[in-house]
Length: 76
Image (cartoon, rainbow, N blue to C red; front, top):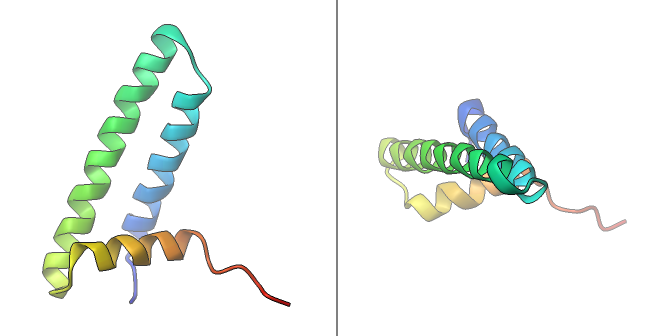
């Protein structure tokens, strides 16, 4: 499945926000959590819209986005 670049960018934004949240404390963590929440909501909205456009289950798009971010490990 071809994944739009915008969904990959949204997934990366969620991961970056998650990392910032985990590495902060106090007020900084609260702000980072809000950023993560907004990024996650945007990702869910984007995945849902794309799944509806393509006529495929949302979970299938979620998995495809994850695979696009993390290609399978090489087994040399």
